Image (cartoon, rainbow, N blue to C red; front, side, top):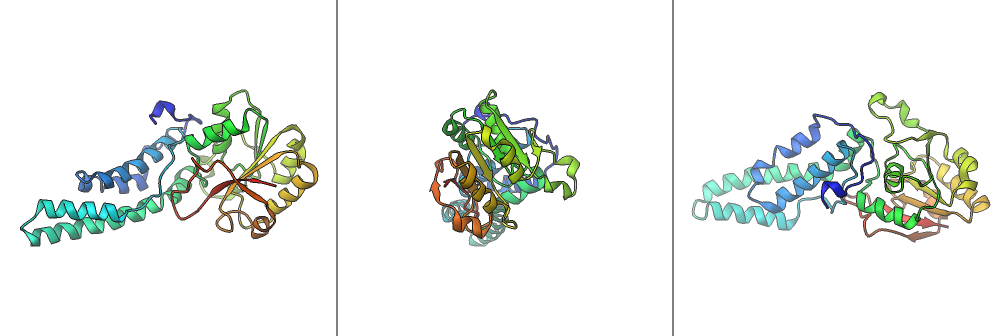
Length: 276
């Protein structure tokens, strides 16, 4: 997928210096002849630069240094110094340490996306296109929209579609708030208030990365069952993990959905569900 095919969600932050990326790229020259490692670094680089420029990135694979990459590095060292074991050992030690650092950095991409872009759930172009096709132009209410990446992507796919993004904007209490405004229009209201105000006028309700520190998600589920049971309720999160309350996961009847292009790149196994 080239850049022209990526969804343009807005201006992005247009940061000229991203320390995380600078640190990762500092290892690129060490591995320039080891394509499996440079490819890993480049995939992370492309994702970060895309979001910074206002584009939803491609879907990422699981980000880690694999046994195959380690074998590639070992092969490179042996080929470079087939009969000079001392030099080979010195080079291997240098590259092995660098590999550990690359592995640490790529495994912590999500932390960087949160720090620089306030993107908690990874929103990729392939996934948003799948979701847009699935919703098929129906009016949408997004609850707990955060900084609005998901709604912004859907709006870019279908500019005439009704998409109402809402969030209680508790993140206003975080530092550097002026640098972390939503990437699209997000109305300030609680999930329950948004549901009561807009629930009758939509066909699809989205809830992505609800916090695991509140039972509001359970109350949303109960209200949907009581008053809006004819709506599609789509939830994105990690079952019994980093998102949503334990009570929600216990009560929700889950149907896995659209996970071809929504696969986790790290230890947080976020998935898409249609919930009854």
